[in-house]
Amino acid sequence: MIARGSARRRTLRFVHIPPARPDDTPLTLIGELRKRVRLRHYSRRTETAYVMWTRRFVRFHHKRHPRTLGSDDVRAFLSDLAIRLHVSASTQNQALAGLLFLYRHVLDAPLPWLEGIERARSPARLPVVLTRSEVAKVLDEMTAAPKLMATLMYGGGLRLMEAVTLRVKDLNLTDRSITIRSGKGRKDRNTVLPERSIASLREHLAESERLWRADLRDAAFGVELPGAFGRKVPSAARAWEWYWVFPASRTYIDRATGEHRRHHLHETVVQKAVVAAAHAARIGRRVTCHSLRHSFATHLLESGYDIRTIQELLGHSDVSTTMIYTHVLNRGGRGVRSPADG
Image (tube, rainbow, N blue to C red):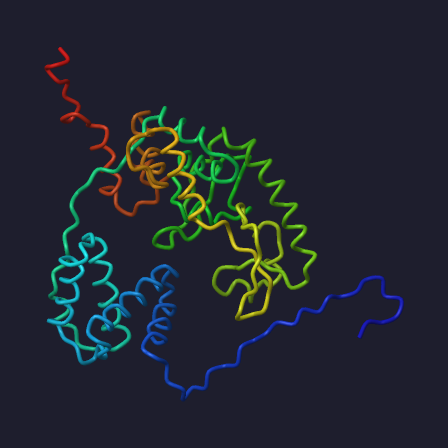
């Protein structure tokens, strides 16, 4: 109850808590798979991929339980992916990784036969890299939030999901830096914030702040927080620093908690905008969001920055991954001048 004369009223938030599953209720195969993936703090995309490959594997063998299947059945499934569906080697290896996880961590099955399955070898391919003028043409064809996100991906070497999941606290406009939280491999890193984007970022953040203030009028509103942080600091869900830099236009209701939430801008919005801009600019090559990250690394090499610095900015665990961009620079036969041009 609220006492009379109180100048300030408290808003009560009723949170729906789903009933706990009884300990004696067994999980389904997919339910157990999701549980084991989450216990190891794998990303949601990894969980989605492992669940998808497990379902496809079971359907391929006419819904037989994986416990009844052996090495020949796994090889038959992987061969079908390559021969009939013509999937890439990386896709085939992802399917194998999902099945390895299923047998090792969910079924607790002996794995000597599964460990011996040879992984497909991915061919060495050079990334698509745009010239500086081509990047400028693509950005000129873009507008609004997608253009700003593409500028950050090129100017800071961000991956697509790293750009769309940025929060306000991750931007340091004074030091011109961006902090990437839980990037690929769940690693944090700092990268550069392009100076040319600061003015546009200030305008965009002002619009996002107005949207955040409108969201706060709903007492049940709160953005999604990582891990168990929301239970430790519940107020963070309504704090400006945890708000999305690129919020979605619509809100949704979280089924588990009943809270009203706003997601970040969906990644397909940016993907479609980059592809459309590349077509409009008549680039003539397959340009994706990741091409902007490749161009960032290659142009830094052209400017004389050392490979270790670029490795840290990109967040690569192994410098050999970053070395691919040195091959991009050695175009035309390792930089040899053609005799036809003599």
